[in-house]
Image (cartoon, rainbow, N blue to C red; front, side, top):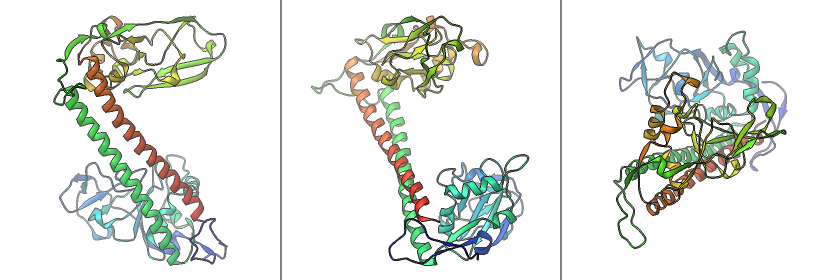
Length: 405
């Protein structure tokens, strides 16, 4: 071990003394490359872990689906407790996975390097691989003339600071508990998304119906053309002389985005159009790809070109709160695709005339309100859990900087 000694900014009060600088090679054995085999259907016993089977965020084993390595299998390629594998090539060079016995029997693939941690707490070493310092070192070491990569001899030189083993265990246990919390939140987030998807299918197929405030059934749904629900509303203005807020629409129903301080000299058009809060806005060039959205409050007053027609809702027929969920439906995207003839990309332009002829099965406005309120409540729960995940991940990131040298 090197003589250099330091202590972290944050420490559990029962520990003292300096941390010592060493290397991965000094606290591990059997650094080796995995089996060079193709993946086959899972045989029920022998799992296979490749770079793509390691989640980029949590670093958990997340195969889709689980596979088995082909050919004759050797025991030296089976992971055991205390083993960490590292991606040795490609864009995710350095991505690690700490073997978890819950994942069963796993053989590791050839583009992974295995290190068996024997001289330190394996979880403590694994947590080091989430730190910025680690990734900075990997970035420097993995520079190649082609794609990034690192070999076993280079990985052995990975610098690591160590406290005594009891402190390593304490830190590892603490951070593992945070990881577990993040995992639970992500699972909750996924389940809420799945629940919403299932409920939406039942709502729009009318398997689930709401009652009015008096407990009575709402009227039957009616198939209506969009021309009854929407009015094309174009607010023409001259192109500004100064920089302005331009509005764009992401494909795949991902909503609007801003292009602030847009230079008017970069476009030839002399006329633009104002988008207003709660408009339905469509990018006619990429409508077939789901470039349709409801204008958000922060978009209000932004400018668009003639390729982005805006529509207002006929409120006695439809409300934007409800329609925001309609445009997320696969069937709606399919309909947009049908009225966008032509080849790929910019040659596929939506017909505004045909757009208003599209038909959709609509409940009355009062039932639309009930459905939208219910789905919006679910969206808020999903957003809240998403924020909890982000906050917890940021909390852990801060701890990683404070609890290690």
